[in-house]
Length: 622
Image (cartoon, rainbow, N blue to C red; front, top):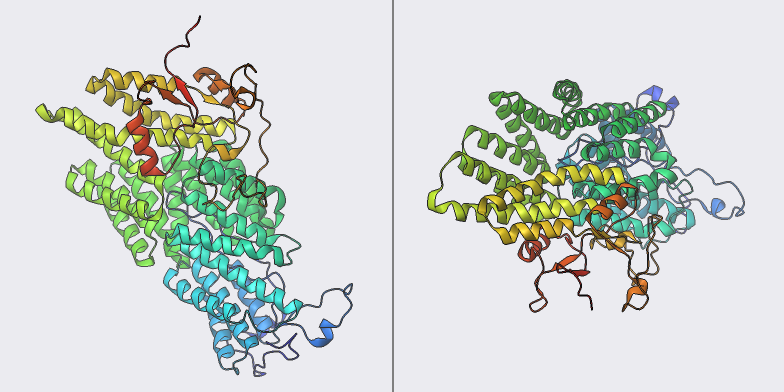
């Protein structure tokens, strides 16, 4: 690529047939921001088309390069018919008319491939393929998007070493960032969360060099990270990051509000969820983004289903499904079918539930959406159990768990194990296991107790007291199952240790890094060994109380709170760490629930207790 190339890529003068005459006066559409979360446990989302906010171009001419630094920027351009084609395709995306947008990009790409091969032309082809891949993502054509995005990335990376001026470098960075964001979204949608995280991190590393006065690309990188946190069910971290982005990223405000609505619906805060959805709808309407408003139908349906408003949920899901089917958005349609299958099962309509589950699973498997397919398998497992088909239930549940384990979605692994434990308890209630009852109870406890500890520990991820409280209600159901099984087994020692663990309380903490060991994986290193990366989130206003200065090491130790005091601290919004380890034996160093805590931390990759140790026996007085 010559230093600030002096010629545009030389297209023939005639416009491609996909560009009608009225396109010459079509106003450029606004850039479509990063997508909303679309994990199988959340409603479907809008895929990222991510065209640039300015008309794209080749690197600037020498005359442009010699302009004074204070001169206003000269709009970049590929020339006609490409500029008009990009604008028209963006317009189709926001309408939305996805087949029309794909037709425009495909015709422009055919035209670009007929031009003599140069670095400028390869960048143009990469740009077109990147935008085409984003439209295919929106249309849930995941195989087509994979081909387009990977070809785009190869072309754009291939011209990285070509000579280019400052403006040409900015264009190259713009296209590379968009392509990496599209790839991260594609990998997320197909369930490869670790590789999606690595791609988002690669995009983030480019941001310091990229001129982004409105912060749009930075916000899109942040939103991609929010979606990955959602797919891992890390609700607290996702909410903090989305809220932080909301304060600094007005360009994608409707998307972030929509995302926060999904988070609140998933954590039982339904009034707040509806408030976010209403504000999001206003934003979509102001931007003229019809597709965003359509997505809100399914998101509100999801919230209604979580709130137990099944008739309203079914009506909204049916309405959303009709829209997605008409537009050919089959992944979004499959999510609606998945939810409607659950609703049919709750109504007792087993035939409808079975048909919808089969249709949803077929769509997900054809698209390669592995995690979404696993969610549908898990739903099928529940239906199989209700029909009394235990072998089918186990096959489907294990298949779903295998996918979750492979993809690193550990909270859902815990949910599968909890479901299996509940079925074991139900089976114990229905049938006489005779001499095998003790073995059956041990199996149920080995599943239920580590899963319950994991779900309980997840609440320490939340910054807000209300969010923690609502999640605690969900986690309590799991812990109640563990207590019931322990009581049924007559294991007095286990019951004692469960009570000690539940009454241990917690410690106030000053930094969110104390709550989880997974900060590095989410792309936000906040450890002392990374001083060049300051914390992404401000620490909450916390109070710590030094203990007696005569006590060894107490000057820097936060106050350990008992169970009631810890709940009180949480209720007013103070951050609390996981409970301490309850030391049961000074001689052996064994802690309460040790084997279950170790199993939980190994299976689900989450810290269950803090490093602090507290003896269960009272201190001696002299």
